[in-house]
Image (tube, rainbow, N blue to C red; front, side, top):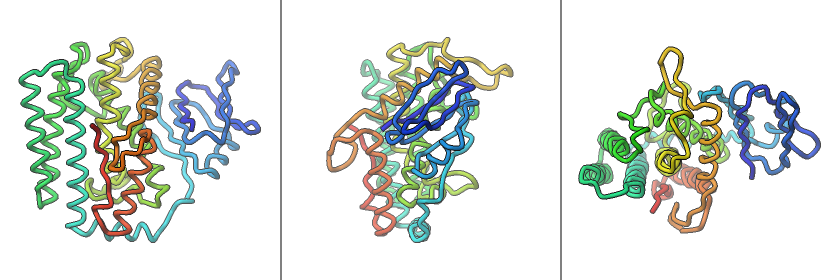
Amino acid sequence: MSHVYVTTGETSVGIDGGRITIKNKDNLIRTIPKETVESISVFGNAILTAKCIQFCLTNGISVSFFSGRGKYFGRLESTAHRKIEVLEQQIDVFRDYELCLEICKRIVSAKIRNQEIVLRRYAKESVSKLSRLICDMKIYREKAENSDIIHSTLGYEGMAARTYFSALSEIVDPEFKFNGRSRRPPMDPFNSMLSLGYTLLMYELYPKAENEGLSPYYAAFHKTYANQPALISDLMEEWRSVIVDSTVLSLVQGHEIKPEHFEYAEDGNGVFLTKEGMSKFINKFEKTMNRTSRYLLYDQTERTMRKAMHEQCHRMRLAIINGDANEYAPIVIR
């Protein structure tokens, strides 16, 4: 399946016969068989024709709109996958404290374990400080797994996250050194890539959860706030280091992206990828999404990352409709 990213301004996306067409201001055309398109991500001032919008809505193709710098604006969506009976079950399940606690523990344990593995993969040598930080993360993970209070589970997750980003800063190339996580806006190149990657990840998962009849806005782990897709935030926790952090580390450590691929806001409030940098990041992100592994879920079936996301959302639906946390299979890498 094709996942289309339109990153050039003054571009038009339309339909011509059996193909989706992409035309820029010079009328250069790229075409893609429309039956192969699964999603379209539009950055900047590109437009979709009415015929293309109708096709996407009719066929359940996810369309997301971003600014040229990667700020999310919104989605094009139909109501075809709304299932009120699943929503009612979802609300009931996430009001069940014990069941909610078990799902939270599964999410947090898998997230921290994945972070530990990513750190070990990218550590060039066994630095004593790094080893101590990974050991601390393991302690937080074990405490979260044995917690009987949701608030405590979330507290251990927060401590592990701070430790993780401290460890990441020990690994990265000196040109991309950073001081902890910064967002809205990101204040350094490394955080700029993380923020863009997490945004893309969220709106990869969003339509997959909806296709299972789940509401993106009611969750176990993240609190429900107005306009915040809390369930998608739950689902993406396990993927953050697996998809986004690994993509950023690969770009940086492989010297595929450089400081000149970033620009600073005129008011000094934020750092953002240039057009060339954006292209490099999206290409690498897509390669990561299409990478296959047999160790993402319990059954060891080989899947791409995207296929595993579909399965993850399906397992969350099973946990909800059956009221059984054991039905949810968290994503854990090796």
